[in-house]
Image (cartoon, rainbow, N blue to C red):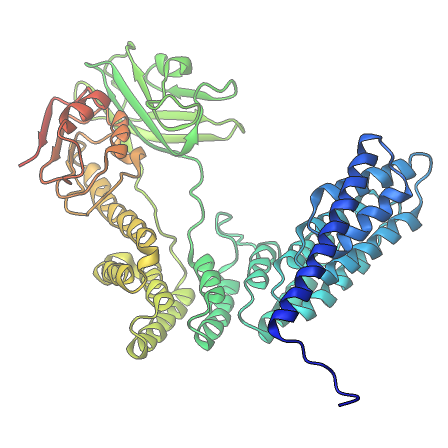
Amino acid sequence: MHGRLKVRTSAEEALRKKKEREVKAQAFRAGMGRILQKKQALELDQEMMDLTGKILGANPDIATLWNLRRMCIEQFVQDEKDQALFDKDLGFTELCLQVNPKSYCAWHHRCWILENAPEPNWKREVDLCGHYLKLDERNFHCWDYRRYVAEKAQIAPKDELDFCTDKIQNNFSNYSSWHYRSKLLPILFPNQDDPSRPISEAKLKEELELVLTAAFTDPNDSSAWFYQRWLLGNSQPPLDIVAFRMDLQRQLAVITFSRPVNLNHENVKLAASFSKDISEVAVWKAPLEKSYSLTWILNKFSAEKSSQDSLTITFTDEDSTVHTIQVKQIDDSTIFGIKQPKFDYEFGSAVVTVLKTQLESCEQLLEFEPDSKWTLLTAAMLMKAIDRVQFYPQMISNLEKLQTVDPLRKGYYSDILQKWSIENRLVEWTARLQDQPNAALDLSGLGLTHLAFEQYLAIADELDLSGNALTETSLIKFKNFVFCRKLSMLDNSQALANDTEAAIRKFCKSLSELQYGP
């Protein structure tokens, strides 16, 4: 029996581990107790550095101890900055990162050291990131740090893009690399024709081809699908006037914007070619009493019927950029104007050809994997980018199916479906408004649980919301609808309280006619 190791039983092993934990816990309590004593006495000395180092070397995620190390270093370098001191602590953080390569505190401390060191070596840090990303190419802490140090080291964006490409080709399932790519491409390949778009059409075509290969290599991995959605996604609409409506007889006006604005800001100006009172921005009020709002309402003003053929509303924003909208007098009391909404970006023919090819590929994949959630969602977005009118029924069908095959995200798919449905109706309605300013807006039967795009609904004369499932929390939006004379809510959700009519009138007192309930 000599020379053979004794194999511990499970009970003995558990007891041994328990004793080890007790010893470590006792040492930790003793060390923390001593550190707190020194902290209270403001003894920021070498002993404090040694004590914090022992604990952080085993557990680098204690932010308080890193703060104390920084205080010690600041104390040591009050008279003269010593690069060796900073280099030593950089070496210590590397030891901590070996214990936990995803320690927020250790990476943050490294940033602080370099920011305060007299001679930081940023290029070395870039190389260090390359080393850590070889060990774990999806360590997003290291990717964040690389973006930071690459900028400090003035690494060329092209070199960083090449680095991202190498990492993606090694492993398509690398969300951080795709994300970094989305930050570099607008710098290297800006869209000169349309600055609101992130990258040029030519580069977009290349990226769509690259991401298709990645997505179909592993359809269940989300990284490439998310990047493709960024490529297809619309940019945030630029600030502009959306619509204007004025009733001279009722002394009521409303103006709406594509993004929230503050008409009471000191640098903001609002003027009309037909009325001086419009320029008195202090009397304009946000219906929900917020500083920044999409909708602004004006009551009790003096303005007369205009004899001008061309009427203009001019808005100067906080950055002194001027925005205008052409309006017209449609009868003795109404002045009206609206801009056609643009919910989708119009891609060039070369990109559309690529999108159609990708849609065909998605449809082929769905024949083999009909419940592939990423493919279903991407196919719907490709259809929307190609021709939302032609593919609208199939887009809605995909979203409805997604709520079944991916029930955990049912609310997300429902929100997209509602948004696209409203957009579709708004495009049709605003087109009719050019000739029929009092045309009713029909949002019936869409299964809506909430209202969106109040910047368009605010000028509606008649609104049909029947056959939806609006919740009571959405009723506050009715404060925006000051021009709505008729509201239909037949067959609306039973989730609404019995006093819905009173609740709506509380928010929208201008309604002269209200239809609710069967």
